[in-house]
Image (tube, rainbow, N blue to C red; front, side, top):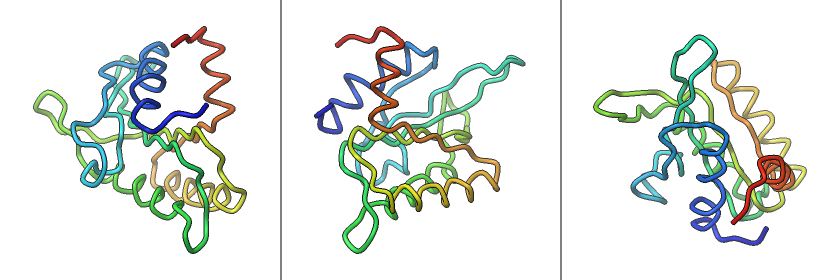
Length: 148
């Protein structure tokens, strides 16, 4: 899947999340610096008890790497910012509980290890991060009979 980040968000991720039953799915009003760690969100889904749970997504259309020129530290900081920043939904502040990190390109082994360590830290504070790598994303698209 060779898409730039904006088409990945608009043409793949947003329609797929809607197809999976999430509500209020849309991109943030300003993409890039100032997005407070979220490309898509907040969006929601009813839990089995009928309460809304709030989600966000950070989407990457670049290889995720660790080390000196790597981008994994920036991604971890974006996830941190997503969890600590209140979001306005219809005049009410909501907090994201679950973040999806959606990657359409490779994640190096070292970056994956760093992400897993960070995810354990988020979990210890009651947050959830789900990595959706390229193969998982393609599998989801097939399972949902997704077409462009």
